[in-house]
Image (cartoon, rainbow, N blue to C red; front, side, top):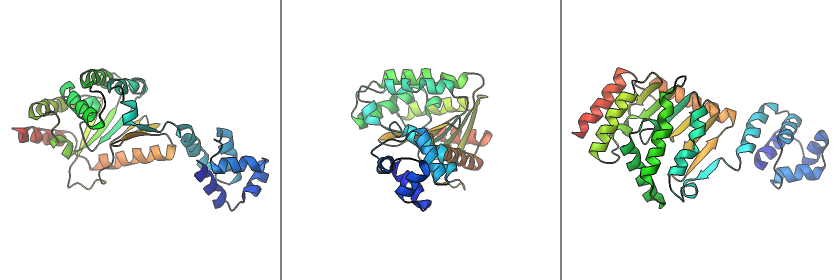
Length: 266
């Protein structure tokens, strides 16, 4: 935050003292904010942007400031007592979201998973992160959370890379059941499933992410989850989802790709 405020001041061609005079602040306050020794309030950010002729930057900066302490969540820290709590922590977010855009480059998205697939995946995550393996309870929590997909008034535009269909989680039997379940879920009125084929003209594969009502994005990395609320960055993720969706195979074409993946297990 301090770096971004300093950059705005520099772009405006102002010294710290000149900025303080425009704002009617003590020079020491400007110094504390630009050095990161003090956290700016929303009003501080609006005033700073206004003084630097950059009022259009204020909304993003305020969102970033509010999320500065909670935007980065280390998996090992939140999983130290197991995975069940992590699944339950997002229940309220899922409950209030009306449009959930999902892109996955690695696994079947959680709300489309079978219990066996979820348990196998969560057990592997616990093993890798060396955290307590409560994958059975965590899978139950994920199944319960995923019931939102059946509620009226929700939409789930979901995109996956074709490689996800061929990455075996839990062995051939678990994977076969998962793919059969995916065929069923793709037929739900609330779900729009797109599959991005390797030779398509879509964007390069991105990190798995979920957009909640175009207001918040959760990006999943190997070691952590990043929460994004800055309007311009959320808009970029929505735009990327739309661009990839335009290049994805949907409807009967998507179902054929899933059926082909099932045949490959035989």
